[in-house]
Amino acid sequence: MESTYRFDLWSTSASVSVTEPPALASVVEIVRDGLHEVERACSRFRDDSELARLRPGSQRLSPMLADLVRNALDAAEASGGLVDPTVGGVVQALGYDRSIELVRAEGAPVRVVPDVPGWRRVHLYGDRLELPRAVHLDLGATAKARAADLTARRAARTVGVGVLVELGGDLATAGPAPAGGWQVLVQDTEEDPACQVSLAGGHALATSSTVRRSWRRGGTRVHHIVDPRTAAPAEPVWRSATVAAGTCVEANTASTAAVVLGRDAAGWLADRGFTARLVDARHRIVRVGDWPAEAAA
View 1 (tube, helix red, strand yellow):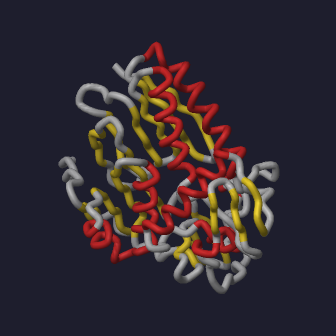
View 2 (spheres, rainbow, N blue to C red):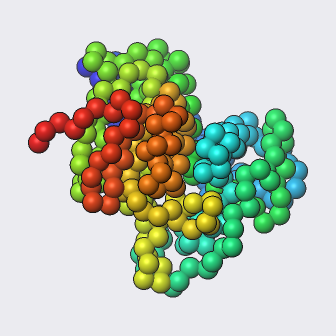
């Protein structure tokens, strides 16, 4: 029988589950230590984070930040630029310049940013970053997912049990799963339709939402997922997009790209062999690939 520890993290909720209850305390300690390391490396909301101290030009990165930047650039390439870590300036201009619970619910119209610099302008050679002027990195689309992957694997390898790490909709597993698989409830908000799925060990899920991190500027609702093609929040065709994949980074890259793509998301996901669940503004569900049918109420 698995055991779970729940806690608050990065203005969202998080949980750690294990297949062997006596191992829970040890696994939680490993996971939380790893999460602190990620936060110190790439938090946009800590003046003392390594990311906040980056300056234009050439500089060496810590192993953790180098890993996170590399994953962000890989995600940009894999998504054809739909998930781009150089949207930081746009996100700040939209008003998301502090932890979400501190962002004012209402505000003046946002400052228009003409374009996104583009991920191809950023170069990483091993641990050496070449950062152009006026490029502000935002690793939010991949860093939390990478943290789930890293901490789940580290804990499972160290303690020798099955582990599930869930960080605000980003979920990674490692080691053996419980009998019947990890039972995961997929539901973005209480207003959304729910679906329970079984997840095998070593697999991941990620949900990207246009609802949870949203606010209003100049009477218009905005959210945190930026379309790099327009330098504006993606059109909220989908309330949420959930994708299953081998890693949480891969799943989150695809779910974020799906939100950006809007009506073209289902075809894009299907062409790439993803299993996914999209919920539109009217709470209608679009299933992609082998996503299970919703159970009758």
